Image (cartoon, rainbow, N blue to C red; front, side):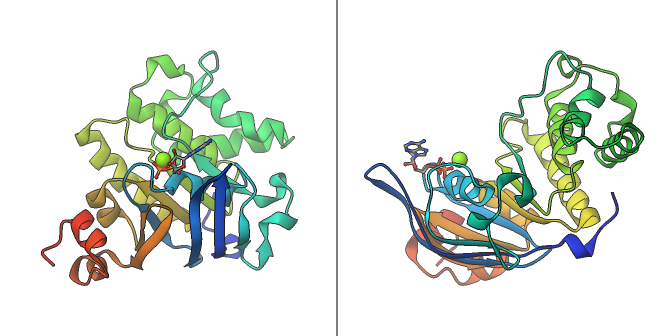
Length: 245
Ligand code: ADP
Ligand code: MG
């Protein structure tokens, strides 16, 4: 898995509105994410972060508005052609399979030739530092190692976009910090357009190129971490980031 700039794709979201029944959860979201960018959705619980991420992955109720990957509307792309990889907070590995088998699974489903599977799985495991644990089962790994397997399993299929929904929130503080650094390094290595969802402003600040702050289904502000901190556009952003303004 080498960085492949040809695969880098930006994401454009235009007037996105999404409701569960009567309840509007996303209310006119507009956003432009650059190819190769490490982008964060930051906001309190219930602000719509997961719903927005899932909409980009093509899950959940059909939204109004548009989501473009590069210049392709995802509505026109069948799910298997969207090539969007998502890592969840609960990483749900197959307990009866080894680490290697867990990571290989998606490639087998895609009917990738066996010799190529071996090589790609080895690469992915090396990337997350787990090559030496390839024959273990998930129950024999720590939480952080299991989350690394989940990340390897997602990047091995070479997605165009990587979506991470609070992937570190089940880990203890020390491990979270270590994984943050590892994740950032991995992202830089792969050059993958990445969206990282978190409710933790420090986590968003240390990891991302730019942040969108969400509250109640509305993007309150978009900017680089320092821009938001120095120049919050409203009281919500100021309070949420804990700035002096
Ligand atoms: P976040 O990830 O920021 O915590 P979510 O996107 O999960 O927020 O949820 C945003 C809002 O949408 C919440 O009010 C939540 O209750 C509601 N919601 C999320 N999923 C569903 C669902 N499947 N059905 C109904 N309401 C939902
Ligand atoms: Mg969520």
